Amino acid sequence: MDTPTGTRFGETSASEPNSASSNAGVCSHCGQPLNRGLEQFLGKIGISDDTLNTLKNSMQNVDVDEYLNTAREYVRSGGEKAKNFAKDNPGKVAAGVAVLAVGAGLLLSALRKDKDRDY
Image (cartoon, rainbow, N blue to C red; front, side, top):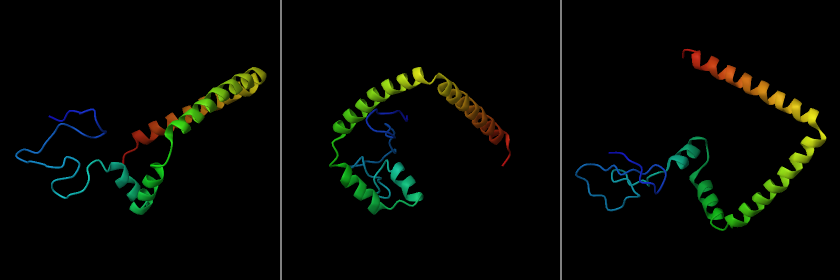
C-alpha cells in the first residue's frame, strides 16, 4: 500500500514485488535519483543542471538561522509600522481593502469562466 513514510516529500512505503533494491535513493530501473520532481520541473523551464549545482553549492554556505532571525525582526518592525499607518490613514486602508476585494472577485470570476470553458 502507498502510505507516506513521513521522512521526505514523495516517499512512500510502496515497493516493487520481488525486487531487492540495495539503494533506496536510486531508481532500480534507470539509476536516476528519486524525488527529482523540482529539478525536473526547473529543467523543463530552462534552468540547467549546472545552474542547479551552483545554487546547491552556494546554499550549503548559507546560515539559515541568521536569515530567519533577520526576517523575524523585519516582520515585527513591519507590523508596528503597518498599525501606525492604518491609524494615520484609515481612508487609504479602506481603499486598499476595497481594491483587494474587487481584485479577488475578478480573479474568482475569471477562474469560474475558465473552469466552465470546454477545451
